[in-house]
Amino acid sequence: MKDFGTLDSLAITVVAEDSVLYESPFLGQHGIALLLDVESGGIKRRILVDVAQNPQALLKNMELMCIDPATIDMIVITHCHYDHTQGLAELLSCIGKTGVPVVSHPDMFRLNFITAPSLRHVGVMAGDSREKIEAAGGVLYLTRSPLQLLPGLFTSGEVPRKTDFEEVGIALKTIREGEVVEDTMPDDLAVIARLKKGGIFIITGCSHAGIVNISSHAQTLAGTDSIAGIIGGFHLIEASEERIEKTASALAAMKIDRLLAGHCTGFRAQVALRAAFQERFEPLATGMKVVV
Image 1: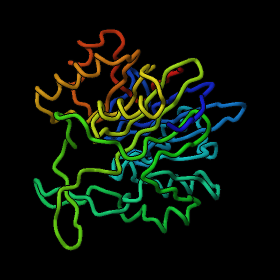
Image 2: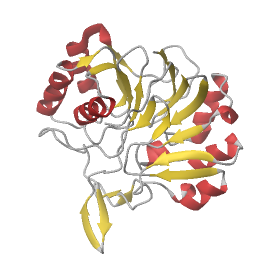
Image 3: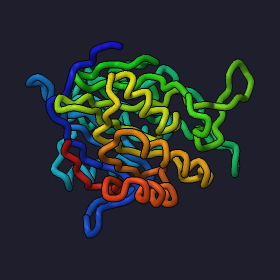
């Protein structure tokens, strides 16, 4: 096990999400973007995890939250889907710096599509091609392995699929060597904060690898069973009642202090998670701030 160090502090702002806080002026959209303010050993960084799909709405929310895009130091893309990547190049242009790390998986730019109700590409769109990202100041760090972002904060790399009840959550395909094949979303990754005060905090996009698989993998990487919290989408919106029940039960058996789930999680799964975690569960909403 590699020693990834520890993080002194972590604050998370939900700058894009399907829902918004009650009586807030923020704009909702189908997608997610989470802004991390972190400090480790005197080093402070501002890291954006995913960019949702509407850069105008994202930038408007940042303006309302008094977040200057120029203060963003790094971007992590959890997987290829448009509702996590669309507008990445535009946002980089607004950041206005060169050499901004953009961390993701080597398969980020592959063809990723659905066939129901009709053929449609749902991966990275043409406006956010490798060339446009680099022209806008981004430097791509594409790896299958865990990557340390700074001491105490690292990506999961590819997540082993070990549970027998978790699945991608949507019928996705790609083309490999001229053949249409199932796309199992190997690029689905999470960001893991290993906290100085103990435990880990897991930041996910859609959890296509399975939130239980992700949590177990994070525990192994960090060398601890203690999970201070998990935030993100769990992609259970179209899951069977059996899968939802097994997911809630498996998570409840883990040492998790706090659970914040939204975006693609789905109402039925949120209800089940609330029942399992009681006041330790919160539905996500744009504008939420989480200080760890």
